[in-house]
Length: 122
Image (cartoon, rainbow, N blue to C red; front, side, top):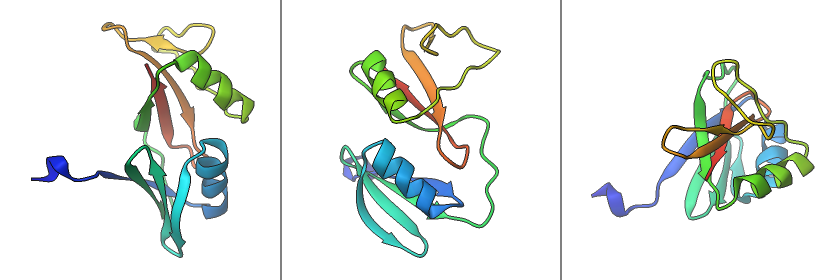
Protein backbone atom coordinates (compact mmCIF):
# COMPACT_ATOMS: atom_id res chain seq x y z
CA UNK A 1 0.00 0.00 0.00
CA UNK A 2 2.64 2.59 0.97
CA UNK A 3 5.30 1.18 -1.35
CA UNK A 4 4.02 3.37 -4.18
CA UNK A 5 3.81 6.56 -2.13
CA UNK A 6 6.56 9.16 -1.89
CA UNK A 7 8.54 8.84 1.32
CA UNK A 8 9.14 11.74 3.68
CA UNK A 9 12.12 11.61 6.02
CA UNK A 10 12.59 13.65 9.19
CA UNK A 11 15.64 15.20 10.81
CA UNK A 12 15.57 17.52 13.80
CA UNK A 13 17.38 20.83 14.21
CA UNK A 14 17.66 23.40 16.98
CA UNK A 15 18.80 26.31 14.81
CA UNK A 16 16.50 26.76 11.81
CA UNK A 17 18.65 29.42 10.15
CA UNK A 18 21.77 27.26 10.26
CA UNK A 19 19.77 24.21 9.12
CA UNK A 20 18.35 26.07 6.13
CA UNK A 21 21.77 27.47 5.20
CA UNK A 22 23.22 23.94 5.36
CA UNK A 23 20.52 21.92 3.59
CA UNK A 24 19.67 24.53 0.98
CA UNK A 25 22.93 26.42 0.60
CA UNK A 26 25.53 23.70 1.08
CA UNK A 27 23.69 20.53 0.03
CA UNK A 28 21.67 22.25 -2.70
CA UNK A 29 18.24 20.92 -1.69
CA UNK A 30 15.20 22.86 -2.91
CA UNK A 31 13.19 24.51 -0.13
CA UNK A 32 9.49 23.70 -0.56
CA UNK A 33 8.02 25.24 2.56
CA UNK A 34 8.94 26.80 5.88
CA UNK A 35 6.92 27.59 8.98
CA UNK A 36 7.50 27.97 12.72
CA UNK A 37 7.61 24.19 13.14
CA UNK A 38 10.21 23.43 10.48
CA UNK A 39 10.97 23.37 6.82
CA UNK A 40 10.59 20.90 4.00
CA UNK A 41 13.01 20.26 1.17
CA UNK A 42 12.79 18.23 -2.03
CA UNK A 43 15.55 15.69 -2.48
CA UNK A 44 15.32 13.72 -5.73
CA UNK A 45 11.61 13.00 -5.36
CA UNK A 46 11.62 12.43 -1.60
CA UNK A 47 10.76 15.11 0.91
CA UNK A 48 13.03 15.94 3.82
CA UNK A 49 11.30 17.59 6.77
CA UNK A 50 13.57 19.46 9.17
CA UNK A 51 11.63 19.62 12.44
CA UNK A 52 12.58 22.50 14.73
CA UNK A 53 13.11 21.28 18.29
CA UNK A 54 14.22 22.97 21.49
CA UNK A 55 16.82 20.35 22.45
CA UNK A 56 18.53 17.66 20.42
CA UNK A 57 20.90 14.87 21.33
CA UNK A 58 22.36 13.68 18.01
CA UNK A 59 22.34 9.93 17.49
CA UNK A 60 25.73 8.18 17.23
CA UNK A 61 24.82 6.66 13.85
CA UNK A 62 23.81 7.78 10.37
CA UNK A 63 20.34 9.31 10.27
CA UNK A 64 20.25 10.32 6.59
CA UNK A 65 22.24 9.34 3.53
CA UNK A 66 22.46 9.75 -0.21
CA UNK A 67 23.56 7.33 -2.94
CA UNK A 68 25.90 9.05 -5.38
CA UNK A 69 27.18 8.08 -8.81
CA UNK A 70 30.69 9.25 -7.94
CA UNK A 71 31.62 9.57 -4.26
CA UNK A 72 34.97 11.23 -5.00
CA UNK A 73 33.31 14.06 -6.96
CA UNK A 74 30.60 14.40 -4.30
CA UNK A 75 33.21 14.69 -1.54
CA UNK A 76 35.13 17.27 -3.54
CA UNK A 77 32.02 19.40 -4.13
CA UNK A 78 30.95 19.18 -0.49
CA UNK A 79 34.43 20.09 0.75
CA UNK A 80 34.33 23.16 -1.54
CA UNK A 81 31.17 24.16 0.34
CA UNK A 82 33.06 23.92 3.65
CA UNK A 83 31.82 20.52 4.76
CA UNK A 84 34.25 18.46 6.82
CA UNK A 85 34.15 14.69 6.67
CA UNK A 86 34.28 12.49 9.74
CA UNK A 87 36.97 9.98 10.65
CA UNK A 88 36.18 7.09 12.95
CA UNK A 89 38.68 5.04 14.96
CA UNK A 90 36.75 1.77 14.64
CA UNK A 91 36.87 1.46 10.81
CA UNK A 92 39.53 1.79 8.09
CA UNK A 93 39.07 4.94 6.01
CA UNK A 94 41.25 6.06 3.13
CA UNK A 95 42.81 9.49 2.59
CA UNK A 96 39.46 10.83 1.32
CA UNK A 97 37.72 9.67 4.54
CA UNK A 98 35.97 6.84 2.66
CA UNK A 99 35.27 3.46 4.23
CA UNK A 100 34.82 0.51 1.88
CA UNK A 101 32.25 -1.97 3.18
CA UNK A 102 32.87 -5.72 2.76
CA UNK A 103 30.40 -5.77 -0.16
CA UNK A 104 32.25 -2.96 -1.96
CA UNK A 105 30.01 0.01 -1.14
CA UNK A 106 32.05 3.11 -0.36
CA UNK A 107 30.76 5.45 2.36
CA UNK A 108 31.82 8.82 3.78
CA UNK A 109 30.18 10.68 6.67
CA UNK A 110 29.68 14.33 7.61
CA UNK A 111 27.53 16.22 10.10
CA UNK A 112 24.89 18.89 9.81
CA UNK A 113 25.03 21.97 12.09
CA UNK A 114 23.24 20.09 14.89
CA UNK A 115 25.60 17.13 14.79
CA UNK A 116 23.28 14.74 12.94
CA UNK A 117 25.43 12.20 11.09
CA UNK A 118 24.80 12.15 7.34
CA UNK A 119 26.44 10.00 4.67
CA UNK A 120 27.12 9.67 0.98
CA UNK A 121 27.88 6.38 -0.71
CA UNK A 122 28.44 4.79 -4.11
